[in-house]
Image 1 (cartoon, rainbow, N blue to C red):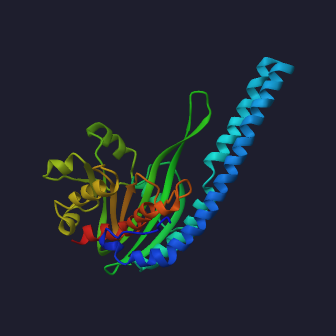
Image 2 (image 1 turned 90 degrees about the horizontal axis):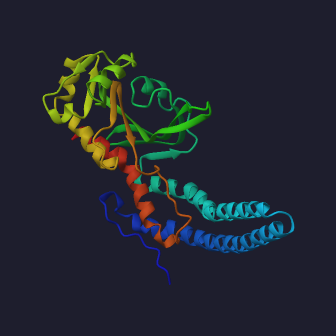
Image 3 (image 1 turned 120 degrees about the horizontal axis):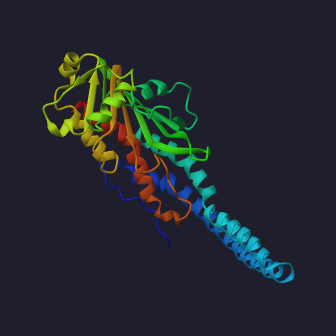
Length: 321
């Protein structure tokens, strides 16, 4: 008999094995029945569509014109492909609705919604500060609010696309950001200070000229490792240095390497009592992708989702420690 088990590995997973056994595994077993039935039906339909399209192709090629044989084959294989790739959609939607609330309740002090409230984060301001690509369109998929170490935070999962025209005048959309925005309460009133990627002297000047909302004063650092990664601008370098210090950007390098699949840089900003961090993730935040594999293997996607939800806590720990 197939076992549905969760082996706890990380400190934040402590106690989740019981939740998995009592709440998650019954759901997964039910969904596995649905998945196998759906898979069997789609295999049946694919087995009907392909021979039927082949038969129509043979008939049209022999009875009408050989060139017409292509069209039934093409349509048949497209239909079979769509039937196959969508085989796990229903299970995926059910998992996306059921699992996140369970994980949030287990971790505590957080709530998640897929209906992102208007004005949840100041996206236009963050574009002006270049934490998000300027001129991009944002697709907001979910929002999380929570508290850790008496610090409030918000998480917004989003993708950003830029609208472009090709040489023939056709509109194309190019994805320029996929990940999360994190907003954390700051205990002190900070001058506007932004940490941006270093593109080299010439491009940095161009970017600064085209971004009038970015603070005017460039903050220089003694560590070449920081200078090679970040361009930092502030309204008040003395106040920013007093609160943050010369080594503070090293925290962002650690965050980038920890959460972004090895990238050294990430965009961040302090403004008043708010801290903002933009992280490009190598995977979809709280994405489960459970529909195509047997669901007793769902422990790893669930483990990754738990890691996603504690990401703000780890960032707060890095900021405070």
